[in-house]
Figure 1 (cartoon, each protein chain N blue to C red):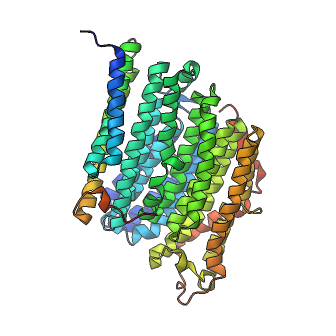
Figure 2 (figure 1 turned 180 degrees about the vertical axis):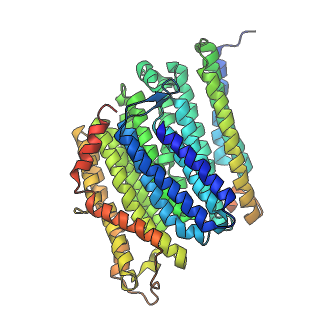
Figure 3 (figure 1 turned 90 degrees about the vertical axis):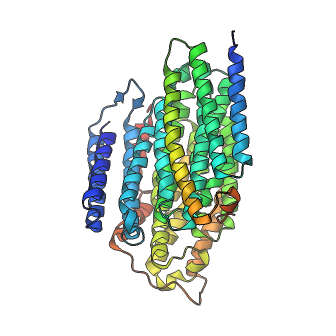
Length: 103
Length: 467
């Protein structure tokens, strides 16, 4: 079976916008974090597909996506620890509860 | 590479000092950390004198003289932040003082890499190295609810914005086939996907510099973070990101300025106006300075839109002066907050009667931020307006000038509170610790003198040609 290149890009674009929607619409801080991961994975798909199908003689895209995965792991670790800190003080992780700083 | 290697060595030594003597003798380990970083700063100046352009990692890492200058500038700013933070670290933040120094230095390392990157991979790594430890710094005050809230907002928007940015970079890679800036510059065309990639990239980095449609995290994070961290965030991190942004636009997208000039035009107008209008209604001084720093970021972007060597020179000069000015204001706010816990503008009523010296320094900082002539802020604004006007951006410069008048109103509100308003219960007379005193004196001298030292500007301008 031969999958055309465009369908990969359609998939990554869909993932990206699902992530953006989730970032804006979700109320739970962990779900917001998961939406960010979707965005990063959309970019990863773009890199790998561009590397594999358009510039097969290179490795730059593959390596970039590996770095993105590693850095996203670090970012998630820090974000989760901060969310735990929020939970300790507010006893929930609802995005609506972190509303002391505004205007 | 000397700067980075020496900074990594300093980081390891600071960590070891905290591990070995940090528990027994807090003061000694802190003084050692500051001393080590001071030695690093001085050594960097030495290296900058005898310097030849280098590259490493097959062109991913590049340095030139202007990069050296900016790195030295960031070093000086970090030294000043350390001086201000000393009192906070020896009193309120006693149990986490070691972490403060280590994390600050690791963000600085990230900024070094970000500034001198020649490839989007190294740029991304530098940006994340600068912003992930920054989130932990914002959350450093574990007991305060505000601090956790500010950190949650910061890390989520930072992760989101870098996600948007690498999505844009992936589009650029798909169309240009390379991640090197010079390769992108050679292959960039008005292909729709390339333009989309550029727009996503600008949006992602706009979060970091807090340009207007992407500025919503700024005020919350600035208010909730510990004041020393806010000072670091508003000056060092913003200056580094703005310089890196200009470098990338000049290196990777200079062949196609019509793709980004119009976007930047609108972003600048909106940034300056919204920053100014929201600053007027702020009562908390940290929030007030957050909105003021948003509008200052708009002025800094005038250098970017000029896109010339002169734009580069005036951007670096503006960042330098903005650094000293804003650090003077934050020095005062952080010493008053450390000792009395007050940050509201109403608390500053009648400050001149009880603390005349502090009030005068704060007044100088506000005048310089507003751009009143004899102080340094006027000269930096003058150069950056001139750079933009020389590229024919007359309407933009006119709008920016109008906004300067609005900004004078709210900067003078602070001066009015300190000098004219009377208060029934003014702040008590505050005795500043010696470290902050040194920092404040340095900042005051720079505000008064830097505008008149014209060799400084020509020094920067010489180095920014063909950087």
